[in-house]
Image (tube, rainbow, N blue to C red; front, side, top):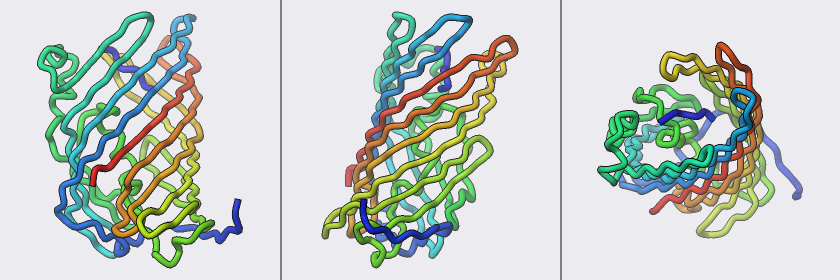
Length: 265
């Protein structure tokens, strides 16, 4: 299988330091996370326009292992992956619970990831360490922003209209997130998030080097448990544009992603 990369009166602050002491999720509690995504990629390859549509569902086991004043240790274990891809009139379906769909050798990377714990250590809003895994973006997408799972701000700031900003970056990506508290109740906190992103990656597929440069904008809503600060649900839309380069081509590409994430508590 080929891999295609694809208002209110406001109080404003800039938050560069997470405060993990506000996290009340029980250490060691097993949690299920289900992430559904719909990707639409418009690209020009070899002077031909192509639309690639991809729907996927990923199931993870999720466990908080440790909490400090400024960080935490999280273990995420992918347990199942389902995908349906439509490209150039062809359809491909994958389900890691199906022996027949997983027999193809090119899907070995998914097999190697399934049921393998990925340990993430965060401190002061930065990634300290993460278990190294082979690339399989649909399975590991949740790992790029582990802070999304927790509401790490003081309870006194959880008032309608409160805003703050944070950012994350690594060798391939930089994101800047703007948060607004929209509603607060005894059981839930609702946030609006807007995100600016830049992505630059270099990968090899069958010995061919592919460079990808993308920038874009995302809007999201997240609902958190106001008692323990754990994410309940997220819905988001991302639009990105850029180029995909190989030794022979430099092609424009646009990407639209719709995501729905549910945490079963």
